[in-house]
Image (tube, rainbow, N blue to C red):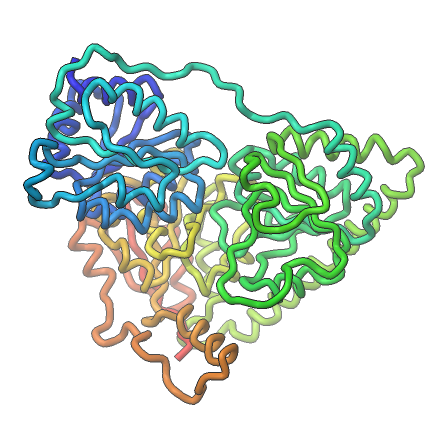
Length: 555
C-alpha cells in the first residue's frame, strides 16, 4: 500500500466527508486518489485562505473534522491567517500541504521551505511525514490532537515522494473515546455554596457552551441563579439566546470597560474560556473589586490560566452545568434563595425591556437617514430573511445592530469569526452551507472584509450553494476609524486630523460586477424599502446571490 492510500484510508477511518483545498502540483497524489473515494467531497477554493476559513466554519457547523489541503510554502503562507482564526475558534481540523520531494531538500527546490516550522505557531501540533511507514501513526495522532479539548487545527506536511512510497502499515482510527471529564462533586458543592452567598451574580459565557451542546443547561442555571449572561466581545457562536431576558449583550474589549459593564456584580461565573480577548490595555482586573470569580472549563490547561480564581472546576460542560443547577435547586429548602433569584430575574426582564425600547427609539431617530442607517438596514435585512436561516456575520461595526435585529434562539443560528482577522465571513459561509445544506444561509459582510476573501463567491457558484451574500457598502474601514479615535484619545495624540488610508472610494468597489465575473448574480440597493424584497427574491432563487447595500459611513 502506498503512502497516499494510507492517507485516504485514514480519512475514511476517521469519518472525513469533506476536503477543502486549493490544488497544486505537490498535491497530485491526493487529487489523483479522489476518484477512488467518491464518498469524500473536495470543496475547491481559488485561494488557500478561503479553503481554511471554509473548513473552520464547516467544523463548527457540522461537528465533524475536515481535511484541508494546501500547496507548499506560499500556499501554506496564504492560509496561515485563517489557520490562526481556526486556532482561536477551537476548530478541529487537519491541515495538510504537499511538500517537495525530500530528495531535493538540500537543493532548495522551487516553493520549498520548512512547512512544519511555518505552521507550528498557529497549530496544536505540526509535523512532516518523513517516510510512508509513519503515515498511519501520524494521521491517527493528528485526528486525536485536533479533537482533544481545547480542539484546534493540526498540520501535516506530505512530501510527494513519501506519498508514493510503499508501506505495510495500514490506516487505523480509535472507535470510541470517552474523554469528557466528569465534574468533581466537591467542586460542585463548593461552587453552590459560593453562589448562594452572592446577591448579584453574573455569568460570562464562551463559545464552548454552544460547541458542547450545553445551552439549555446554561439557561436553566442562569434562571436558577437569577444571573445576567454576558457574551465575549469576539465570538463564533450564540451560546445563549440573545432575546432571553437575562441576556445582557456583548462585553467591551479592555479590562476597565469590562469591569464597568459587570457593574456591582459580587460573583462572576466564567463558563468555558479563555477569557478575555482585549484590544486595548487598561490597568487592573476585568472583574469588579471584591467579586468572587469562578470558572468551569473542559480543558485543565485553560482553567485559571489568565486570572486567579476563587473556585475552578474541570468538567464536561453539559454535565457540570446540569449538576450545578440541580445541586443549587436541591439545596435551597428554605425558599429564601429562590425568591431572591426570582426577583433578580424580574429585574433582568425589566432592564431588557428598557434596553430594547431605548434601542428602538434610537433606531427611529435614524430611520429615514440617507444614506441608510445601520439600524434601519439591519431591520430590513431581518424582515427579508427566513426565520430558519443561518446567519454568518462579519458586519463588525454593524454587528450590534444585527444582534438586535435577529433572534438567535439556539446554537447553529449564528456564526462569526474568532481571532480578529477579517475576511472570515464570506469564506466561512461556504463551510457553514456545506455543513448545513438544508437551511437557508445569509452571509453579511462589510465591504472591506469582503475584499479579503471575495474569491469565495466563485466557490459558491462552482458548488451551486444556496447562499445570499449581503455586502454592506460604506466605502471605508469604519472599524479602523473608530479605533483611530480610541487610539488618539488613549495616547493623547493629535485628534484634528483625517483618517489616513481608510477610505475605499477611489476607485469605488463594484461588488455586483465582481460577483457577476465569478458566476454570482447580484444587485445594488440604496432605498431601504427595497432591501427586504431583494432579500426575499434572493432566498427564493436557487444558487448563490449577492446584494450590495449602500449604507452610511463615519466620514
